[in-house]
Length: 390
Image: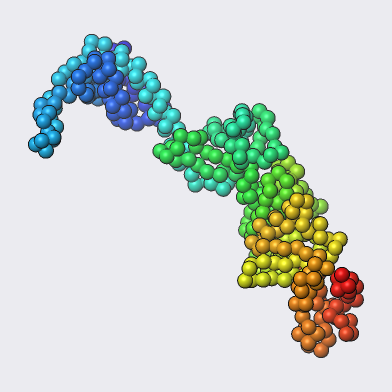
């Protein structure tokens, strides 16, 4: 290829691919230097210069003129000797192709990084392109490819070609620091649940209903704690939706993952009791020194409170941030926990009547009047008596 034609071709490609022309020529000069060193078998380093006007290519051998610089502390000086070969343009054209391809890839990675680095945590939909043991390649908008690693996929999920999948953007790799795929997605991140509810629940999207915490075992079960900024608005009901339609749509997107929606409370005992739903809790005793919540349940609620393989209690602990120790009434009595119930004199109404010492299923103290001579109302006295009898 003639030199003028090569220059015009480089300019055309720079414009077409969105590459800076000056940077392209500079990179080409840098990459051509070692190539000509090998081709010409030069004894010293080479320097390549491309004339920005004519496209003429020159190769110079950098011959040292003062090689004994170690003893004199002088800078090494060179004499540039013109060693331009006859077929200089042909070699340059061949090298330019690989450099241009490399620059296009780098430019694309940089653009992806700048376009997506501020979108970490966002929900995004992609089309499945291919899957292997290590990851699934997803095509996003603008033909951008992203990676969904196996470690970020729930164990029960399998994906098929061209299937539309909702994910959250987990990370965006800086192309200068990593060679991995630029955009990393996740289907296991707890934030996926919040983003899906933002689509289904206007109150969540508008910030009226807040997600205070999320505990998740991806693909199996999750618990979310919600609160409302608007007095009188039920945050749990807003997330559940009419006939359960809103939460059902989220569960569908999560391929059947069960979701427990819990009302958040600033009171640790109430929050822990709610977090153990659907189990009915009799009492929660908070030990702030050990950051432990001792939970008392009836015998028939013990296995439900703990859950299969401890899942319910484990998720409740993650959700609330408290270490949870679940006991039935008999165990609590043996360990002296029941003795910490308020005495008759400690819990009276303004009229002098005693208030029941039990806790309701939602974690609140029962506000019924206690029966004469007892700490409990008629509803809870029978359960307390059985526990005391062992």
